[in-house]
Amino acid sequence: MTEKASHSTTWINQLLERQQIDLSHSIDSNIPLWPGDPKIEFSQVADYLAEGYFLRSFTMGEHSGTHVNSALSFTKQAADIASMNRSHWLVSAVCIDISESVKLEETYQLTVGDILRWEQHHRPISEGEIVLVLTGWSEYWLDPEKYFNVVEEIAQFPSISQQAAEFLIHQRNIAGIGIDTHGLDSPHDNHFGINQALLSNQKLAVENLTNLNQLPATDIMLMIGLLKLVGGSGSPVAVTAIF
Image 1 (spheres, rainbow, N blue to C red):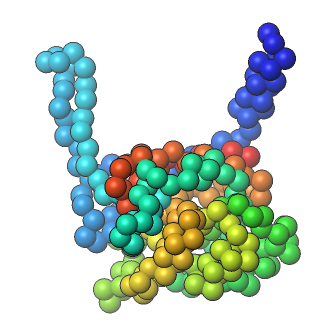
Image 2: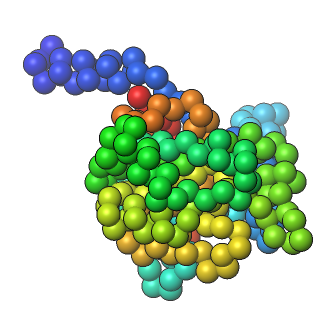
């Protein structure tokens, strides 16, 4: 074995020995869907007896399940999901836990103060990291009614404050933000200010994550696998955390 091959094998073995956590929800026809999004449907197109193999087709919205958004979601002529920077798909991350605040206020938003307190306790957030926000809301995933928590026709769930997003983008130059709810934006924000701020600055917006409570606060590597949908406003993703 050459020295180069031996080094590669050592690196791979070290990676495989690390803890790996799946941060993506499984997809079926009963997952929570934002009002107006297309239903998830599976159709069998081949059978073992007739064709000798089993095959299904499926349809779903580009922003359903665990997913990322592209700038094309809000801006015509913007980059589609297939054109996004490949450096986003293998990236370091940190996790900020606001779940205790959410227990007291269901519509709690991550604040700049939360970020600064987290940094005092851990370390400054580094340029190029994704900030994962643990709200604890993913525990309601199997209960779509609670997951959206609609009160007087407006959903109620935790999100990110505009000030916190702008601070992370411009003061910390992060790679993006991920959250374990159906949206980074407050359900009251019809202009999707958080997504707009992130995507206009070529940052990632990742929504409907799960298992964030199993992560450490720092030193996380994310592997994000997406469908390179030409003309896509977003894509369902498989997200794995390694630490």
